[in-house]
Length: 74
Image (cartoon, rainbow, N blue to C red; front, top):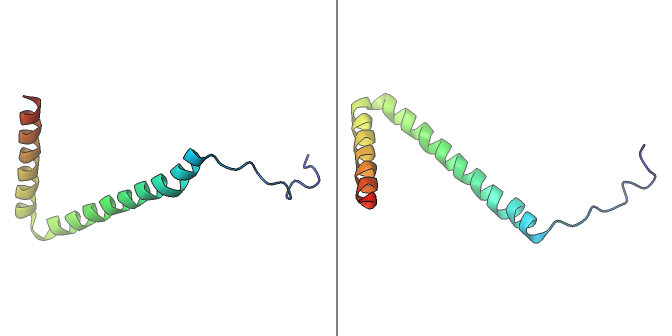
């Protein structure tokens, strides 16, 4: 049952870490995810216009990352 005056009671204040998470971290992650989504969309449009060049760029980037990771582990 709903008690009388339940709307007039204030909830307990959030802790500082929870407030930081809700106001700073989560919006930043949402913005980053939107940026990644926009970059993927731009890449998809680019691939439709120049597939060979896009494939070469992707292979080159993959080779560079593999080279850097292998060099770091050695």
